[in-house]
Length: 515
Ligand code: BGC
Image (cartoon, rainbow, N blue to C red; front, side, top):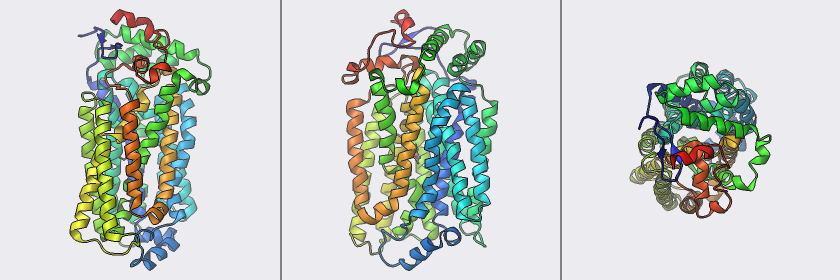
């Protein structure tokens, strides 16, 4: 089909596109932006459960945990200051995502990724050398700025570089790197917890510089996306990149559509105001609700606090980190499942299956904890029950890793038309980080008040979000990113908001050629 325009299920075109070594390489490098995000998620849970770290920076939390060793299991780590350490990063990231929207649009996706790597590098140096809480929190704010830039630009970069038929797979490289970052952090936590002299946490926090270096240097080596080059007036460069990533000279249709999309985009003066227009309502809803729901799966309760959670249910120091390693491995391998199936089975099938699996797992986990600790939070978990609990936590993590994890980043990055894509992605990042912050901040006190009911709380949200997908999310697999409008206009509910009119967006002027 070299060069031929193929009509897809939605009635739009897909362009020729196979996996070339060049697109693979560029997407691999860009995906490493996920490493910094993941490394951070994994490392904070580990260090905040290390005695030496708590003693030095959060002595009152340490004293409280020691004093309540044999009392209420649900409340022993409850400290706002400790959670502020974990979640300050997300506040910085959400504020940064708006600045990143302009950098990404005006200077290109590449420079946004570069800024992300550099600030993250500075943050890791500050954290590794920290002597007081202020240095720790300042370091984390810098890390947050890095994550804000990277999460805004990397998913967009991947979705724009990838051929439509492989977009899911290549975009999920970002989530795969996130899970590798989490796993690496978990392993480092495990290796450093026992270091004599109690400075193991410095290694963990300082080593964040390694993934930061990878994305900083990587971003320098990458070309920008054709869409971004065209939008900034580098038409010849854009064509050259397109020829290279598609592995064929026959890129005229796709190139022309990109130029048309860009012309239309440049007519839009206020992407932030435009995004509020009625015709973008479905995309806006998705950009807000998908990351909102992703966080309400409760995944970060497991990711941030797995070590704390495992301590709570009676594992010893090492065992708790071991369990975090186990969930880290499951998280990574299950993400591969979605890489190989997302462009075949589609986004909806993964969302619906994964959502159901997570719902069941949460009910079981909540019930096991209820049976053991009741509402008083006292008791010890038997070894067999603890094993069962770890098993269902893994079942839950696997469900997340092939559904809401990767799709929570993929879907918002692919549904917008060019003129509002960067703004739309910022909204997705902002909602994601806000919710991550709120849940990170509230978790320990929620565990203390809701007790095992916390897991039922998240199960309730799982039900709501799975129903939302069933009724309101159209399938986007294989649809060219310039053609996304058709998907919305043909949807039973969103159709009334979106004008199916072929001129509404750029791809339209050429669509009739293919139909
Ligand atoms: C989420 C993170 C989460 C991670 C776990 C990401 O998609 O955005 O909040 O910690 O997945 O793998």
